[in-house]
Image 1 (cartoon, rainbow, N blue to C red):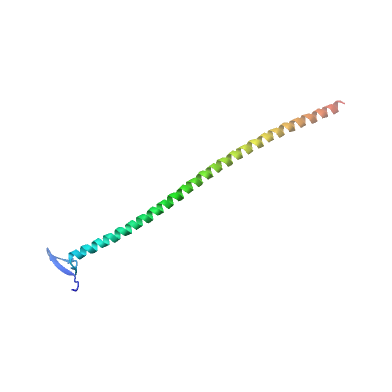
Image 2 (tube, rainbow, N blue to C red):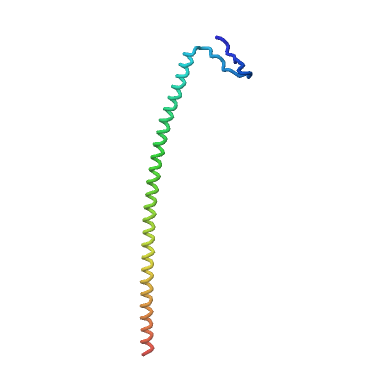
Length: 118
């Protein structure tokens, strides 16, 4: 096997580096290139499969998160509705108590007036 050397050639008054000569014929170099391309393609195919699996997993996770958000929103709406109903009940009870208090005050005044008249 011949040793590989770098060759400096002169082109147009400038010296340039030329790639070393390959020690095996062109057909073998082409075969090596094809094998390298095939390996790269196989790696890309496997990485594409991996990426597709990752995409599927992420889509499922996103769908689950969206479902969770929808569930939380509906729960929040229910709670707001319950709060509103509770406030309305309290307001109604407050009005009823005020009405009863006024009635009691009137009854007490009426009794006081009766006692004064006697």
